[in-house]
Structure formats: C-alpha cells, structure tokens
Image (tube, rainbow, N blue to C red; front, side, top):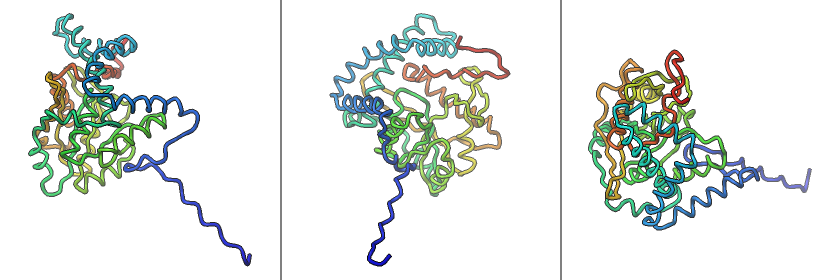
Length: 319
C-alpha cells in the first residue's frame, strides 16, 4: 500500500556450529544448571595453590558421594590389574579419586580460567612427530584416553598446535553450551560425533582433530578388541576417519607429574595405518591407550563402565 514502508526481515536466529555454540538456552528449566556453571566459573579463579590443596579433600568427598561410581572404579581395577595385591589396588583407587578431585579444578580452569600457572614447568615432547605427520599438508588425528588431565592438557597443547576436537554432546542444553563455549576458547572447532562430514573436511584441509575413543558409547560402529587382556567394545572411528580422510594418526599422552608440573607427549605416527582391517586398527589404538594408562594408572578415569558389554552376552561384570 502506498505510503507504507516494509518491515525489515528479521535475522534468522544464530545456530550452533562446530565454531560457535550459538545462543545460550535461558529457559527457567536451565537456571539450576547455570547456577552450577557460575559456581564452577568462580572456583576457576581461586589461586592455583589453594585449588591444589583442595583437590585431595574433594577427591575424598567424591569417593564417598559417588558410591556407585566408586564400585565401578574398584571393579575396573580388579579387572585390569588382577595381579596387583589388594592393598595396592585400594591405594590406587584412593589416588584415582584424588586425581579426580584435582581434575575438577583443572576442568574449570581449562574452560573458564587462567592456565598460566600450569604453563610454568610444562614439558612438551614429540612436537617433531606432529610436524613430520603434517608433511605435505596432511591432516592428523590425535588420539588420547579419558584421563583426569584430559581438558587441561588439550588447552595447553593448543599453545603449540591448533587442535579441533570431536566429542559427545551433553544431553542438557545449558551444559552443552557452557562446555562447548569453554572448549572453543582454545580449540579451533568442536565437532559433535554426528558431524562427520565437517570433521572429514577439516582433516582433508590439513587440520588436526583430537578425540578420545576409549569408551563404550553404545554405538554400532564398534568392535571387541583386547584392552588390559579383556574384550572391550571399542569405537572404530579412528580407523574410519583415517580411511576416509587420508589423515595420519598419532597418540597424545599427558600426565600430572609428582612435582606438580605437567608433561604432554606426542608419539610417532602409527605405521601402516589405516589398514583394510578395522578390528586390527582399533586394537592398535586401544593398545596405545593402554600403554598410556599403565604409565600413570591413577590419572585414568576409572569410573566409566568400560567392560559393560561383553561378546556373546557372557555376563554382567559390574553386578
């Protein structure tokens, strides 16, 4: 109609992408989660010396509070270290929860705080292996395991290599936004496990993709391979990603040293990987992760039911 001006079209709402968490969900149902996130962001700003002092008592508290997870961890240690005397396994369980307590502060600092104190005394080994794997513009898959130092080590490594990550998104929208936002402070991108196409594009363009394929996630693209001498249902994703992208694969070990410092260690690229055998390649990946765990067993996340699925339904190991 003459004399009337058209209203400008409304901009489409910002959508989450591997490079942007999108707008935060703010419905009333998310407020409790945001309260927890806010508390975590506050404790991320405590002095590092105080956080270190609080790590052990927090670990003791978690061991008491997480009764079912404590039983899972104890059972995992029995399954993985049957030759270890019971007293040593009990001490290892205590040490694992101490590491978990300290990890709560490390996670908070990695996502929302300052990691300058962790850079002091940091040792980084094997960067030459990463550079060799990248020759000719080749993409590189960087694999690790679910250690308590996982998030902090990824942030520290991003000072030296532009890592993107692949992960399982959180079911809670507010937590998913907060964690993705925190990781994007240092990672170049965060690909959800269903975002295979953009992850492959990233690798084909010579990018670095980091993830931990050592958990039973109930996905169909998994096979049983040995892990600490027992069959463990394991993701074949490392084989598949390498096969489809032509990327090299290297192992990334990380540990918290007794002196309070951290060590990040990259290994040479896997030889003859990928092969035509997904099961053999997955066994190679799990063997590399097992070697990392044996080096620092107290720092592994033992609370996951790694052996919950057994071949031929041979029984429940966590009863």
